[in-house]
Amino acid sequence: MRIAVIGTGYVGLVTAACLAQAGHEVLAIDRDAMRVQMLHDGQVPFYEPGLAGLVQQGVGQGRLRFETAMAAVSMAQLAFICVGTPPRPDGAADMHQLFDAARELAAWMAPDCLVVQKSTAPIGTADRVAAAVQDGLAQRGLAREQQRVRVAANPEFLREGTAVRDFGEPDRVVIGVEHVDDARLLRELYRPFVSQATQLLVMDRRSAELAKYGANSMLAARVALINELARIAQATGADIEQVRAVLGSDPRIGPQFLAAGCGYGGSCFPKDVQALGVLADCLGVDVPMLHAINGSNELHKRHLVERLSQALGGLAGRTVAIWGLSFKPETDDLREAPSRTVIDLVVERGACVQAFDPAAMQAAARVWADVPQVRLCESPMHAARDADALVLLTEWAHFREPDFAALARSLRGHLVLDGRNLWRAAQVQAAGLRYLGVGRPGSE
Ligand code: NAD
Image 1 (cartoon, rainbow, N blue to C red):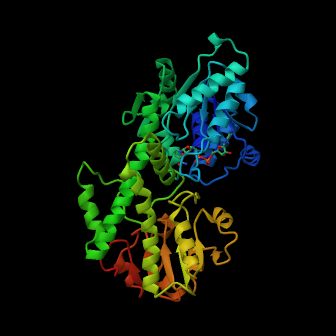
Image 2: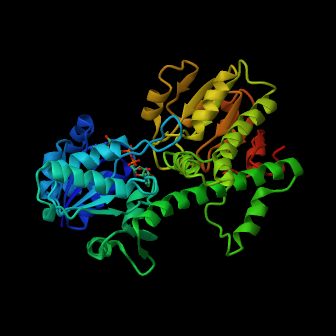
Image 3: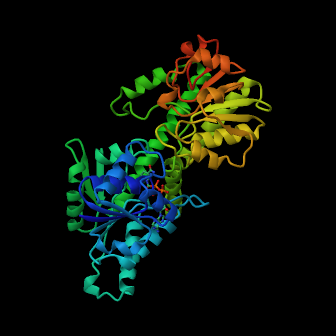
């Protein structure tokens, strides 16, 4: 098929590269000219394992092209909208990128092109996209019978860090449509990616849109709740890792995504939970649980800093080493990462930070460019040098088996705060260091 993908961020570029690999002719459009130039030059503008090779392969085989101009979409039978839907100051989803893309598409696309909304967007957005496309086609003077507007909602569930694999082997594909023909076309498109283990769920557009917000809200709530249990464990001497084993063995709960840590972040959970809460408020629907999720997560990040401060007898004048800045391993994405809150609070309380991340150093240099108290270091041991404490914030594989004896020599103080429960207390303590985990005994 001839496919256009609007937006070359994490979702758009992965979608474009995977569809090109499946044999389709893909045109990826982004209004960021610098990004398009990088992609022309064979560089991927962010870190995502396996993506650069796939992009280069698609370009080399002539199946993947990049453009800034929307005019080229006239060739497409299918156009995916994968632009950002970031939070507005009031927490609602900012729909500018999405409606700009819909209007620009309508100005150039073939009238029977199927527009596929992949961006996460409030319930009812696909209806509004359809109206915007209808207006755009009418403005082009197309006769009414030529204007059978086709819009599908096909939310994306890929995860940064495993995005290529998630797209290629999805747990489920959700297709929200108005017309059965549109579902048929999308079923056909996803056939190479769908195995026996994949559920392909066809439904109305509004249900598809709510399903995406619902999934993120459930996952965020799960993280917030296990962290609340970890704080209770800490206060009572229980071990959250034992508790987690019990909870995970109940098939109604399941073991996945049940780790206590330093809170969730990223470009999706915080914004989607908030956007759904704002939407519910606008509809007059009471959603006290939904409103509590992000607050609990924020409180947990603050609690971590409080604990660090207490263990050090205050943060003023201290140096804190941070290992891991990205919101999760295998990505360089710092959007809403726990490191942002933790570092800002630590600096606010008068400490200096020495930080290292295996992939996010460039992104970090932009985020903390104007904060002289934050020094980015070339290796984990450089970050630890002469610091009063080490805080682990992202469970990168790089940090799994550090040389604790060397760490003990590098640090000035003796404190290790393991924000991801990555290490065993005994292992750290054997090097003469003091260990604090999240909700674990033997960690004070
Ligand atoms: P992103 O911010 O990384 O990328 C968006 C891209 O769209 C940018 O490159 C931007 O320049 C481009 N763009 C914006 N408006 C445009 C326009 N009118 N024409 C052409 N290009 C335009 O976004 P992302 O992280 O890929 O997320 C995209 C959507 O997918 C969001 O709604 C997000 O919530 C959702 N989503 C994201 C993930 C994830 O892990 N990042 C997972 C599932 C769903």
